Length: 300
Image (cartoon, rainbow, N blue to C red; front, side, top):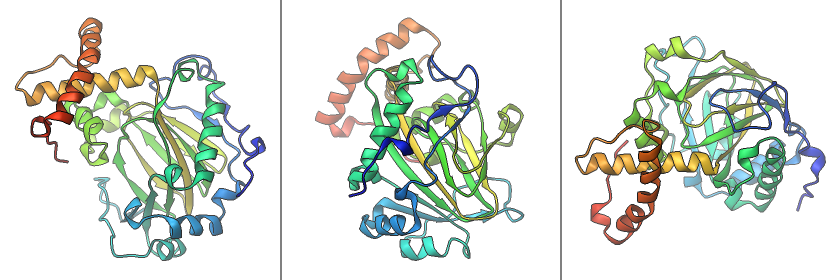
């Protein structure tokens, strides 16, 4: 087993003023990482990981390339019949995007890396001192000049660039319809969020990432990515803090209310109502476990 010493991780260095010591903001910001030379991201180690993972944990999609994209930023087709190792080896020749799910559950070395990385983050942000939930890490492998689809994640995260470079385009979570956010948190499916051209006027300043640079992706903030020439390897660490977990619970209760024919107040419309909804979350969760036929069926 590879020894995980802290020399690789002293890396979470906040490089933008005002981004440290408080709650995580609703705007993106850059930080530094020292993961570029970490052995877990060497090509041979990535191939070993791909060989050991169940095939259904590896998402492989075709992607459009710069100069050929149609501006819709849609997800490319799922490629279920390709060999992941071969796809990785051919990233330089065939425009492809790969996402490796559940690596921290499948490989103890990535789990240890995740644990150490989060401990570094805790040193910078007060609202990360409490218990984190939905904690995980995902690896992205993609071709040069590819255009990665517009999407939002069901959490907040740090996207760490390891190899290659890219530009990340981030939008405020507030551009999304309330029901789109509810569907996202209920299903964890990125397809719940669809690009609209009118979002462009509200986009944050684009963030360029070179190796050893990271960007914070705020809670439910949609984003898309364009790679520079050259293969890209990125590592994403996502999580919920106690504060973001409460917001997630409000959105899930709102979705339940809609399925009951009730129009709920949007999140953050009333702190008192939001507090009541967090108390409703667990009884509704028990209801769904005991009476599965009453559980909302959300298709994305």
